[in-house]
Image: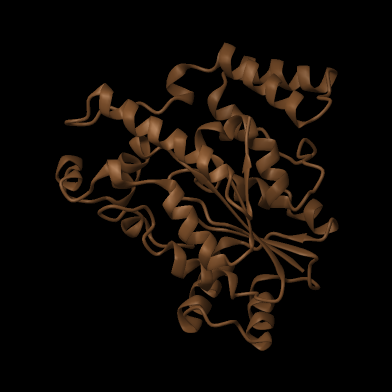
Amino acid sequence: MRVTFHIGLHSTDEDRALGCLLANETLLAREGTAVPRPGLFRPALRDAMVSLKGAPAPTALQEHILDAVTATDRPRHIVFSSDSFLCVPQKAVGEDCLYPLAGDRAIWIRNLFPDNDATICFALRNPATLLPAIHARTGATEDFADLMRTIRPEALNWFDMVERLAAGLDGTRIVLWSNEDAPILWPEILALLAGRSDGTAHDLASWDSFLAELLPAEAMTRMRSYLETHPPRDPSHRRRIIAAFLDRFASPDAVEDAVELPGWDHERIADLTARYEADLVRIEQMPFVEVLKL
C-alpha cells in the first residue's frame, strides 16, 4: 500500500483538493485509491500520533487505523489530507522560523505507516500574505501589528522549514508547489493526490471547481469548451491553456493576494517576496524533494 499525506499547509488549499477527491471516491476506489473522510481519519491519526510520539506504529495499530477509516478491502493507495498534520495554525509561525515543530512532526506522520511507501505533499505560500492569513484564521484578539512585534518576518524562510522536515522524513518522497501557482497546477495536484502517475485529472468530477472560483461563469464555459475541443497534448500544454484564460478573464483580486498591513510598505513586501522566490529556487535543489512548477 502507498500512502499520501497532504499536509496543507495552512491557508493554502482550504480542503479544496480533499473535497474533489471525496466527490470522486467511487471512481478512485475502482482504481485502488481510498479517500477516507476527515471526520473519521483526522481524529484516528491524531490520537495515534499523540500516543506514539514518533515511535513506529505496530502492525496491529496500523490495521486498527485502516479498519476505522476505510470500509473496504485494503486499498493499493490511500490519501490523507489535513492542513494541521504538523500543528494547529496558532503554532505555525515562531519568532524566527516557520513551523518550528516540522522536524519532529515529520517523524510522527511517517511512522504511522512505517513499512509502506509514502509521499508527503504540501504548498508553500509567500510569508508576506501567509502571516496575515494565519493571523486572521486563528481568531487572535491581538491586532496584526502587535503580533509582528514578536515575529521577525525577514528571518522566516521556507528552505529551513523544508530542510528540517526532510531530515525528519529521512528519504521519504516530498512533493511541494507554490500556492501562488496552484490554480494553473491544479489538475496535476489532484492527479498527484489521487495517486495517478500519468498526471490526468480531467475525468474527475469538479476537477475545475477551484478555477470556477477565479473565472467568471462565461469564461469557465469557454475554457471547458476549449479543453474539450482542443485536448491538451501534455501537462505543459494544459498549463498554458489555463494560464491564458486566467490571464485574460480572471480579475486581479481573484488571483492576487492583496497586502495592506500596518507598517508594511511596498519595499518590505517586495523584499519578503524576493526572499520567498529565492527559497523556492534553493528548495528545488534539495534531494528527495520534487517541486511542481509552471
